[in-house]
Image (cartoon, rainbow, N blue to C red; front, top):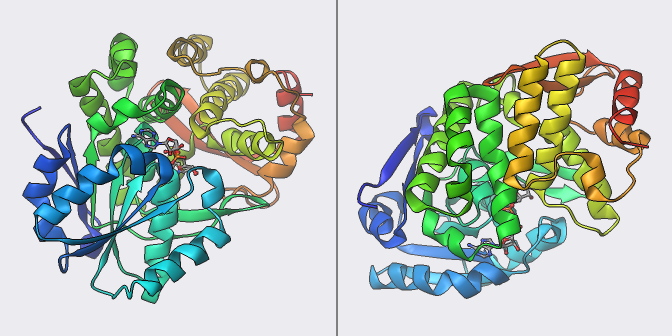
Length: 371
Ligand SMILES: NC(=O)c1ccc[n+]([C@@H]2O[C@H](COP(=O)([O-])OP(=O)(O)OC[C@H]3O[C@@H](n4cnc5c(N)ncnc54)[C@H](O)[C@@H]3O)[C@@H](O)[C@H]2O)c1
């Protein structure tokens, strides 16, 4: 791929660029000097990414005269915890990190969220760069500055808004990603098209198979389109006081499913939970006379065809509506004791719908396969 795609996120003093290509060396050589305050970086990554990608990145930095230290943490959601946060900060301090240094988050959303949060609180905030290595992180979690960790009570309950200095995306990194992770990350691409761009949705219907087979130029185009949409929304509402909530399409159901299922140790990926969450949001939109039957069916069809779970029964485990309701009570969008959901009034058009009662949701969920 010759051209390096560049997307600017315009947030005044916190502005930055997303660079997209299939050759990280090309991107770094062109951009890194301008981004670093001084030539020393701490690369934080997980065990899996360390095996595949870390040596290459380290070499590029070191060949460019940039002093590099790397820290490898355990892969998986469990690393988004207070325990890992403290361990990481202490390790950075043991290396005598200074305020002008830069943290590099090399990995998926787990690394991005943990490292982003770390960089927002260590010395009251230092710079960090995102190098996302999963589809989900390339199109979503690395962009927009939300950082955080989980508590037993729920996901992402502690965190901050802290924008990176740059997002450096190499779509060739996705080649080592397990197919299940590719499909799960693709749920977030579908999400953008459903919430805000009908033409993008139609384009995905045609190109879905090729994207899931990692055709580089189509993946880069899908990543670019998704990032442009996220950038536009984040620029208007950096701290999620309004329109940014639209990005949570499928996520209220999704987070509740993740909390419940992952607590029981069976394991569902974020994107898989979002896939079912989007289908439930489409069903609920139809039930509330917001979207047509045709819209709803088109959405469920594309999710099914991508290989994502599209119905609660696909999970092969019983989920109680009551447990979902308890989880909704922790949702950050909830106000005045009633629920807010992102729903759909057409493909390419999402709305924020307040005032949905627990009882209404309970009976909706029971008629959709919950116990
Ligand atoms: N901050 C935000 O705005 C935001 C948005 C969406 C999701 N998230 C968070 O993102 C997290 C999920 O991110 P994720 O799906 O990227 O999960 P992840 O970071 O756990 O990565 C998934 C798995 O893939 C492995 N991996 C990563 N890159 C690889 C590669 N190139 N080759 C082989 N293996 C690779 C990882 O080691 C891990 O096992 C969740 O914690 C979610 O809450 C945050």
